[in-house]
Amino acid sequence: MVTTALIIAAGAGARLQGVTGSIPKSLFKIAGVPIIKRIIMTAKKAGIERFVIITGYAADQFHDLLDHDDQVTDCIDWVHNDQWQLPNGVSTLAARPFIDGPFALLMADHLFEEQTLAQLLETPIAHDECILAIDRKIETVYDLDDATKVYDQEGRVIHINKTLDNYNAIDTGMFLCTSALFDALESSLTEDGCSLSDGMQSLARRGKMRTFDIGTGFWQDVDTPDMLSHAEKTLLRRLRKPTDGWVSRYLNRSISTRLSRFLVRTPLTPNHVTLITFITGLLGAWYVADGTYWSVLTGAFFFQLSSILDGCDGEVAKLTFRESTYGSWLDTITDNLTYVAFFAAIVWAHGHLVDTTLIWSIGIGSVSMVTASILVMYYYLLRTGAGGSLVRYNVAFEEHAARPQASLIARTLNVLRMMSKRDFFTMLLLCFATLDLLSWMFWMIGLGGFSMAIAVFISTGRLLSQDREARQTEHTIMESEAAGGA
Image (cartoon, rainbow, N blue to C red):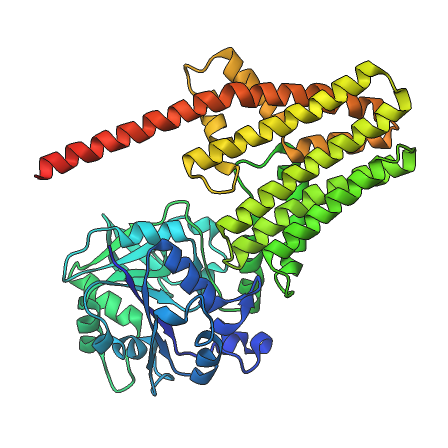
């Protein structure tokens, strides 16, 4: 697979200077991270190991920022283009002595997602051709007038230009290239320089410019203040997870992403946000334990607030490329400690109000069952090597229940699991607290705790069995391939 990328970062970005001032636009921050670093980190996640970066305007500012950044400094080779005022093809040619073999060509102001680039990097390419990643979703392209248009026919570029009237795709600014690009640019070079589009058009005339459709993939050019704002809003929208519960999908994420947009501009790390969330949840438990109406309502409000904040640590980590196994475990453990503390506070408050052996037995038993089910889920994570995130557990659970041969019990357990998600039960508890229904809160966590525990106990064994079967199948396939190769 291709592991080298060339990034053109030589221009001044004149149309954004009203916002960026003297800072090159690719150093301007989107969601707390400079654009060029966001591009580098996304490309690293896609498999790129070495970056050749062409600088021109304000080159020293690039060095000041990236040469001291531990996340990227060890993978960059710098190339300076003194003629950066000329079209971008000249900057591309400046990198020729530093690149050997196929490479990805990326723009310093085009955002994209790792899956799209990863698929492009795995695309087979001949030694005398290049591949352009195109977007056929023309109606979804922001600021279409500014986009570079492409006329594609049977997987090859026929025409490429910003002024095309007849086009069926848009240039995304991502390329998979060989030395054929440098040859095409040199053949197009004049005293006024040459543009990338000139080189691409030269290759297209010889049938050597293929296309790669990004499908549903995301990309965004950042060339104007409006594009800058749109790009950040899009990044925030894409933080939503397919495993989000109902309340999270329609309420919590709308709030948490707005909070995260602010948090990425502060010195707070994702782990700091996790600890703030933890403290907020424990504060909720402390208030609820008092048992009076306003204390219970205040505690339920803090518990709901902690549910919203629980989305922020992951969002900040993803936006700033600070995801880690340690952070996942810290998030999962503190979340579950919060659940146990809050449920115990409800049992304590209602138990002292009613004070019967039955109530205390149900309450203590429910909290104990919830604690045990949490430990079982941890066991699953450790056995499957899923790290500290419960996302894999939830996905496996849903996939098991969605199979055509899944039993009614499996489907019922999946419904119970959905109802046991934090966003759902925190909102329901807040509603009960508002209506002064402490007893309902007790019975909800009492019966709900037992139900959730049963669902986890029954399903985890099946999920572990499926995981073992998948590993055995993978091992058998690898042994067969090794034997065939021998």
